[in-house]
Length: 316
Image (cartoon, rainbow, N blue to C red; front, side):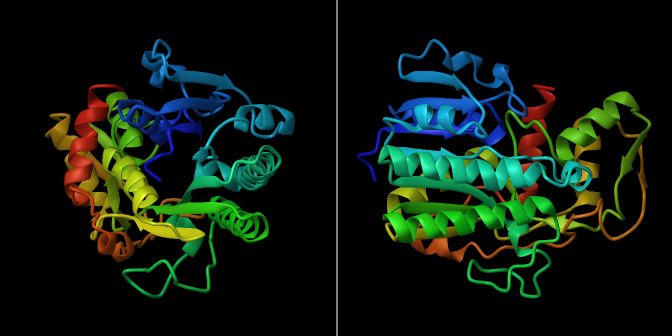
């Protein structure tokens, strides 16, 4: 895979997408970033607009003709675009059907028509629902997502598998832990920082604070994606992209409060075992499949969160 140098990144103006675009450009790739700015932000990729190997495409993945024009001429598609607001999908039940399932179908069908055979897909541990095995490996089943977000990602994985077997595509599917860090636009850290800036005396935390998940620093996420791409060559390559541990929400709240210098801030919990409908309160992933190939993240969950809070306090 080291000879691939021309890529399209969908969701290229988003959190992970903007970090991936920057890294690919550093490595000398020719990169096109596609985004409709529904969730992505122009300022996250503004610095790339003057780069000779960068091109921006403003387009919507729900418009098949626009997707085909964007896909044409690329060697590989990094498909990162999706709905990133799990809570919103409970209120708007077709958002993940459109932005995950249908958008992925349009990307895959455009690839088929344009002769592009390789796709990297950003999936999620949310496809597993609430598993009974911890750490949870890639071959765990049955997969029973508890959110529309997870259902949309699982449906997209199914479509990718079908295209790989029907049209000789090759896919790299990454089931992410909670990714945090530079250019972060959503998630628990962004939420806590915004809340504390509005009210430095109290932080309202959804749930009981015992929710515990693995946290992956975004630069480690990007490096893991590229490592797996280079070092695995099956028709369908599926990896959990994760640190080996997890961190609870109560600890994250204390880290953010400390980093912001708000020693007197009180933490108040709304109660219950999860933050919202569709939330999975306990996640611990098995990352040994990538580890056996020679890759593991540099930071554990706590270090990733600490580093990410430093990044975000300099940006938000």
